[in-house]
Each structure stands twice: as C-alpha cells, then as structure tokens.
Amino acid sequence: MADVPASGLLPPERQPVVIAARRTPVCPVNGALRSLRAHKLLAPVLRELVAELALDPESVADVVMGNAAGGGGNVARLALLEAGLPVSVPGITVDRQCGSGLDAIVLASRLVAAGGSPLYLAGGVESTSTAPLRAHPRDDGGPEFYRRAQFVPASYGDPDMGVAAETVAEEYGVGRGRQDAFALASHRKALAAIREGRFADEIVPLATARGTVASDGGPRAGLTPAIMARFPAAFVPGGTVTAGNSCFDADGASAVVITSLERARELGARDGLLVRGTGTAGVAPEVLGIGAVPAARDVLAAAGVSAGQVELVEFNEAFASQTLACLDQLGIDAGRVNLDGGALALGHAYGASGAVLVTRLLAQARRAGTPGTLALAMISMAGGMGTAALLEYRLLAAA
Image 1 (cartoon, rainbow, N blue to C red):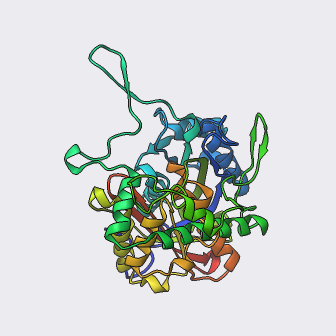
Image 2 (cartoon, helix red, strand yellow):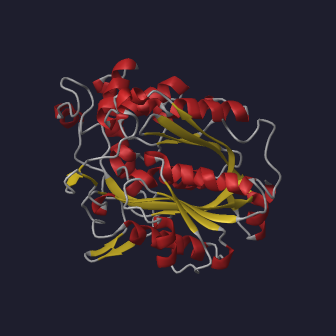
Image 3 (spheres, one colour):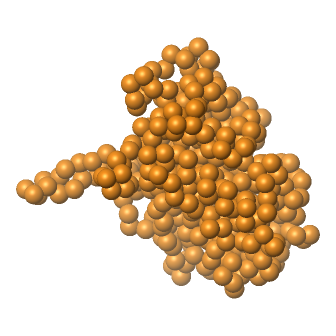
C-alpha cells in the first residue's frame, strides 16, 4: 500500500523531501572501479553530500543504505565511518536485492514521516567486482559454492533473472525488435548526456590506483541496429532476450539527503523532491520483472495521479523486455522514460540502482526547473517484487 493519502502533503515537520543527491560513476564489473570495495565506493558520496549542504555531521540521524551482493557486516556503518562521520551516527543496511537503494530511500522517507524532523543519508552501493564468493558447507565441511542466493522456494521454480525476462517477453508480447531498439536508444541517450555534461553535477569522481574515474564506463558508441540483431539468445534457446538488450553488472554508489520540509527550509535548501507516495508490491516470481506495475499503480492511485500526469520517469532497465512490458501495462510511452539512458547503457550496480533513479530524477527536475513537476522512480526485483516512489519537484520556500 502507498503511504501518503490522496488528500495532499503531510505537515511540514513530517513531509519528506530529498534535497541533495549524488552518485559515483557507474562502471562495468571488473572495470575502472574494480579495486574499490563497497564502503570505499560509498564513502566519497557521503562526504560530498555533507559538504555540499554544509551539514553538521552530528545532525545525521541515521545512514540507511541498500546492498545486495556484499559480504554483510553492515556496509552503511562501515562507509559512514570511512567518510569521517562521527561515531555517534548509526548506520543500517537493507537488502531487497535490485530494489535495495530505492527501498532505503523509501524507508528513510517513512522515518521522516513519523515525525521529529530528522535528517538521513539514504541510498545504496554495490561493488560487484569485489563481492565475496558464496558457499554453503557440505557434510564433509568443504565449501559448496553457489552463484546466487535463493529468492523463493523451489516449488516456485526460483527462476534466474534472464529466464524470467524471457517469460515476461513472451507473456506480454514484447518482441525482439522492440527490445533491441529500446536498448540501442538507451545507449544513444546516455552518450548524448555524457557529451552535453548532463551527469557532471551529480557524479562524485573516485580516486583509484590507476587514476581518477569521473565518468560512466558503460555506454557504447559503436552499437548499431545490425550489431544488435547479431546477438544470440542469452538465456533460453530461440528466445529474444540477449546480452545486447540486457543490462550488464556494474559497480557504483548513490545516496541522497532526505529530511522534513521544515528542516530543509531551516537548512536553506533551495529546492527538492517532495515524497508524495511510496509502495512495494509482490507478483508471481516467474514474471518477477513485472513487479513495478502494481507498486506504481498503488502509489499513483493513492496520490490521485494518473500515469499521464507524471512528466519524469526513471525505470531500472535490467532487461528491455521487462521495462517495456511494465511501461505498456502502465500506459507510459517508452520514449519519455530514462531521458539520459538507463541501466542498459550505464549498467546495473544492484544495491545502488534504485538510488541512482532518484539521483537522476532530481537532476532532471532541476534542469527543467518547473515547480510541480511529478516524477516516478520504479524498479522490479528478484523474488517477484517491485517498488515505486512518486516525487514532486518544488521550490522549497514556496512549497
């Protein structure tokens, strides 16, 4: 269920608002960021957010971070201490797989809505390159390695992501041509955004042993329709889901500052994204990629908003098939989604991807500069779930 009623905003001391958002470059697994563990990716983003708003570090009520493939141990706490925040600041790490970063922001927004005008750093991080090997102990004490965690009971089939994407393509009638065209458009939009410097204000450059990394490493300029058509089916023989129209694993981190409207004004924040509603829903695991649909429908209905009224949409492009199927079901034109490209071009840093969506929406809303602009972040995830957040851009003095 969505948590903000259709009657309007919450009182200023309880109305959540995102007032800053930053991210690292997102780079392919074993690429430019391969030497940085998760807390090393996240710490510079946290430092930058604190510095950007000249926050008193002691004023941070909690650091809420998503992570999906790490080694445990509460990476949020590790990263905040690495960032130089005081030991009095706690941290909590949440895991809803691909949705972890967006769900961390959702959780923080609900904590703000509970009252008291707290301030949170929320988002997500994934170092796929340094993720630990996973194993169960065998009876003889030796390791039995496994590729991924179990998401649902075996009776549900526990499908792999690519197989589920193929099922969605078949059940919702999303053909190979549409998938390839959508993926190619994602690369071209991302390349244009890089050329025009549209990511510059949101990216925190990272220092590595091989130099500073300041731009995304995934978008490919050489792709053409002919090249896309040559990719073979990747998951199901004779299928339509290929490496070309699927995302690639990536490393990256993203975080936001979220607080109450009252506190934001006290801090002198110029503008931000008001959280109008959030929701998470479940679907059948075999069509897990469709999970964002019921979540978005619930959120929009609770806010009294139609999909056509939403001007900015960011959807995590794990697979072109599931992205297009979800947009079709919601009645959203695929051409107006992910204006600067999505995960098909930039990569999917699991625990960070949902937070990247919000970071992108704040940047796009600021670029448009139109108060009242509605924005929607959506993500589908392993196990058959989806999360959505409805946001509204406001100049805070007038909100």
